[in-house]
Length: 557
Image (tube, rainbow, N blue to C red; front, side):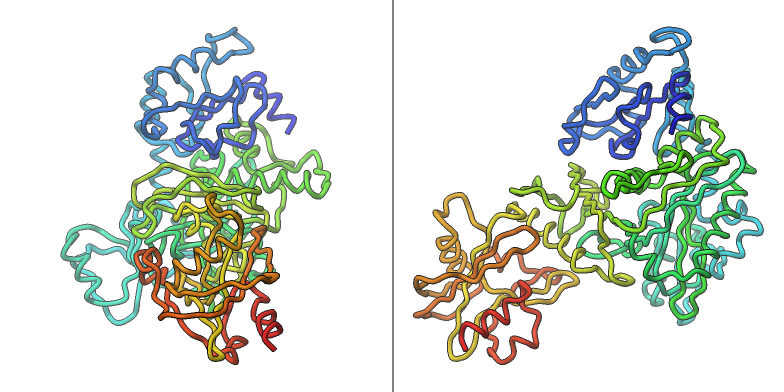
């Protein structure tokens, strides 16, 4: 965007953020600077315009702003008008707080974000009601009560405390016992109660400009799915492909009307830059309800901007002079650039999903793979429950339906569990096909949302001479059976870039017993069980990899 580049010549910007990916979208641009924590996933990102702080723990934005290296860096930021280190320093953050505002004021730094007080007023669940005014008509039926005065009358409902983060202050109340637990814990705390709307949740990133609201690309908000989070209302990702399959033209126009009305209200109160909305579509009626307003830069902004840029790179799409990315529009608005003639670049595909710190997955190994998978992977070293462990981004959709992962989405779960174990994602797999008395021994798997069967086997280790040795070792470890593998050409599959080999075995003896590792790893969400399945039943079960059922039956016929 020429106007933004030109403005930066006069007004340098320094984006300070805990997570560097929130600032990516304008890197390698003169007078755009980034200050963040060092992250192994971004060790290749390096320039004179980027300062990455390496400490024992990740620093929050306010801690970065107080860091001596950061202060020194900010003193060196040149001012085109007044010379190096003498001009006004313009700071942008992901979300302002009063603490950040105070630190900036103490150091005479100009914070470009809207005031934290206004942001809080808009986002907090009870003060938001007053701010909305007439726009409360877009909300589901609601009331505000102290917890001790709430009664359960048989219908499930949403209870929200005034402040919450990543779904932690939002509860779906389904029983009197559940409500009583909250009432006993917080009797005098006010809560907002709302009718529970059953249906998919959509969101988008919008920019308030001087004269209008730029409406961003609608995406499906992936929420509450295991193993990615323990919280049923925690946002864990975005899918830009699914809305085009689900929403009709009338619903899209209604969505845009809600966004425009909120944008107009924000502009009246002096807001500028990004805001997000969450809107649920009631499955039974198709009606839209406003659920949430995010008065800040939504976390999906920079990846949406990368998808917007990618259209031009991969499809040779020529943008007009008045099409810009969401991140460009955000910075331009904060700088007061007139965007009246501009529109955001439209995208119709792409997704990202986040594995958070959970009870089952408190940490993850560094992802390992031979060949770069068709995913962008960002690893974090967080330990706090609910914080990010791994962010996986794709150029394709991960959702087939409301709360339903597609095959590509299920592939992400595989990637997470392989990474948790410490194995390589796309290292070869060797497995055995043990058939006896017209039955085949399979591993029955209940893997979060997936129920399937697969032949016993595992990943090739460095000490395995070849894949045959892998199949022998893994087959023995997982089943405790004795067997021989005759000379043969194994069944071969390439699954998401991974080579997999399946060997028929003979002279089977012993009783199958689940291996120690599988036994110890087995839990209600990720279970392992050895079962004999009649060969005639193979077409009636989900046996993976796809196509192996036909090859097995063809081989033994």
